[in-house]
Image 1 (tube, rainbow, N blue to C red):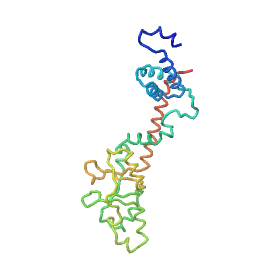
Image 2: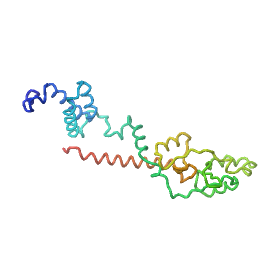
Image 3: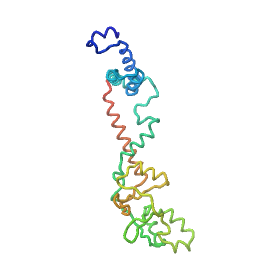
Image 4: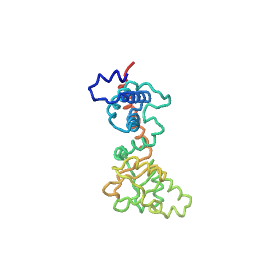
Length: 244
């Protein structure tokens, strides 16, 4: 077949008829395995030169488009999105593409606790609100710490202590914070490092100014929505498949 096709091309374009065989095998594998990029790289490495790179790219791409709905490997998943081997990298890529500013609720009511507020008063605030984490602020309104309702609950077993303690005694100083410019991958690392459910969102220019709270479930929910969008986009791309 190669000797038959040789006269059809301009003289000198193809010096060795064996090249047809190499490019043909590359196209066959690219189509059957649905792996055009890997095939192009393999041909370049096996032949030790790059003169066949352009022909291989054309043939592999054409065979891939013609054979997209067929597959030599029954267990091969349609996209990287569904691949267990790429799942870890894919999660990081998705999360790094989303900023905290896009996720946290800027208009949510957030109860701030003065550092000097008695614990006896804090108990009533905790009981009257659905808020779980409470930022602690200084007299000039700057973030100095944070505590959860669980932290308060641990003081209630000793009546003599909780009647004397204040927010400064209960809070965690130097809390982990994030800024609106951080991505969700950074936020998720903070969530998992300390097993937290919420993180204070502070100003990028002044970390003493608290802007709101980012919830872990908001992060996961945003990730799931982005996955659905990506999968829908990949399904829409399937219209490139050649119909029967």
